[in-house]
Structures are given as C-alpha cells and as structure tokens.
Length: 480
Image (cartoon, rainbow, N blue to C red; front, side, top):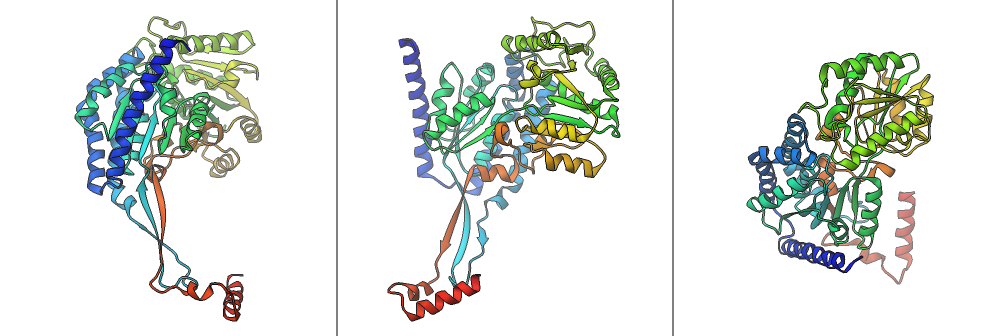
C-alpha cells in the first residue's frame, strides 16, 4: 500500500467511524423507538422513493449505461414501496411482546416473555444490480425493528450513490440513516466497523471477506450471495409456457440477477423444440438488443467476461446459439444478445461459474434422478425452479434438492413475495429477510423471565436434606 492509499484508507476509516459513533450515541439515548416512530421512518423511506422516482430511475440508468425504465419501475420502485407498505401493515403485530410457557410445577406464578428489541446500528452493503431494492428492503426491515443504519453502495452505482447522499438528509438525520459512496477501499473499512449486524448482498468471494472482517468484532452477518440456480422442465409440462417464463426472467435486467435461471434441464426429446421456442420468444418480445427496453451489461469487465464465456464454450465443443440471429454484441452500449449454450462439458467456464448475464446453459436429461444427482454434486443454489403439474414430482425435487428458495412453474418470483423469507443456504448465503423473518433478523428476540413474589426454590437450596431429596426425586419421576 502506498502512502497516498494509506492516507485515503485512514480518511475513510475516520469518516465511517464518526458516522457510526454518532448513530451509536443516538441509539443509546433512545434504544427502543415507539411504534409511531418506526412507522414514521418507514413512511419517510417510502416518501423518499416516491418523491424522487424519476431521478432515481435516471441515476440507475446512468450507472448501467442503459437500464430499462420499466424494469426499474417494477423491481426498484413498485417492489420496494409495496414491501414497505406490507411492513407498515404488520408492524404493530410484529412488535407485540410474546407470552411463553412457564413450568408451573417448578416456578408457580412466574411469567416468560419474549420482547423484540432493536439490535442498534446495522450496516448494509449493497450490490449494483438492484441497488434500490437491495438497500431499501433491508432498510425497511431494519427500521421496522427499530434500528439505525449505514449503507455502503457499489462502485458501479456512483450516480445513484451521490443522489442518495444528497437527498437522504432531507428525510432522515445522519444519526438515523447515512449513505456512503464506494471510492476505493470504503467497503473494506465499512466491514470492519463493530456494527450490531451486517447485511451483505453480492458475490461469494466478497461475502467470505465480509464475514471474516465481521468475525473480528463477533458481528453477526446476513449474507445473500449467488449460485447457479437450476430449472427443470417435466416433459409433460407445457414446454411453450416454460420457455416463455424462463426467457422472460433471463432477459430481465439482461440476466444480471442472482436468483436468475443459470441453467435448465430439458428432457432429451425436447432440446431442439426448446431452442426453437426460445428463438420465437426473443423474436417477439426482445427483437432488438439496442432497444431502450433491453438493459446494458453493467461495465466493460462484465461485458468482456460474457464474451469470454461464449468463446470458451465454442472452443470446448459446445453449441452456442445467438437467439438474436445476426445481431452481434454491441460493445459501445454493452448490449449482449441472449444466447443458449447446449452440449456443455464440465471444464467450460459456464459450467463452473455463475453466468450473471443473458446466457442460458441447456442440459438434457432422461429421468429426474439425473437432475437430483447433478445438482446435489455442486454447491447448494440460491434458487430452484421445477416446472411440472405433478405435485409429487415437484415435492420430490423440493425434498431432495436443497436451495435457498423455490418457485414452482415459474422463476424468480418467490423473491417478490412479502410474506415469505428470502435467503440462501450454504455457499448461496445465510440468514433471511423479507416479511416477519426480516423483522426477526434485525431484532433481538429478548427472553425475559419474571419471577413470582413467592419462589419455591427457597426450599431447594443447600444444605440438601430429606425434603430436598423427596422433592428432587418427585421431579425426576414427573419429568421422565
């Protein structure tokens, strides 16, 4: 590290620690916000998005180079404001103190309660692919639970980061919410702050580094990572319907979604028909990659990575099919045509690394056991997508293939449900948020035992005599 880099790191550290100390001090002065305070925080989050909707969409598109306005409206604006509204709707119920059972034979008159309380100050590290969704939904969970928050944005979200840094003070004091731009090294310093919880969404490699840094402070983490999410199409299911649903999510955000279909199992008798239907879908719905409806690849490095993935597949004997026909990748706008790769082999790049782009690997199979065996021989995926009308077959896949989440007969949309948790498993992540589980994840469910005025334990103290022997013998019989 050079002297200049060391000085910059020191500046970042001082800036972040100052913000953290301010929030920590405010938390200690007011550790348990009321229902009305939390509701107001959630309403302000929602108001910030609604009052700055066009500027937010424009900033995201600027960061991408070109991002479909409709995709931003659907995934960043509508999904987030609806998610916040859902939390407001349930907040009072979630905050209630829970009554728990007490063994009255041993503790007559006593009470057990579980009190949801704020953790304190949480840190949220946000990726670039859905920067509003993946910052504001965690913030909604954090604020519902009564916390304060610091948010570190991606180096690929500079325009949006600067917009939030500018407008957040109009809605929240710095001791409640603060956003930070990634200018190089900020993320490293951010993950070393002794937060009460860190939530990270991003790659597995970076997630490991964040977890290692958090471990130095014994800081708990929620990791939402990626993985190669499979789909499998039952040959008795409508192939046309399956292709339409898979290709819709594959073209959405140019495939740059951690829960997207990474590869699909197609019955060996249907491979050619799958390709034909995929071409027909693209010709009808995404005929021109240069359209404003089709999103750019985020940066030159990612664009080049996708080109290398395709070239590697060709070199190693795979069949690479450009679903846009003669349209070639547009490097100037970073627009990448949708591709299918068939006949994959294990040493291909596409076989081992998450694609994170508009490239779909197609594997053929003859029976469900092949699918189960293949998926289970790899890291547990973030999502699983079985397409079948056979409920027993769908349940077999759910039972035998562990994944973070499942959508049956579609892809991606389990993530959009407000009342079920979202999270990975193993290499695809740990912890959950969304819905009640999000409130719980950002809370300390604090167990409290209230002893009665009279305690029978006074008779069971040493020196132990005949009475204690009789009582303990009786309890052993009762509890056996």
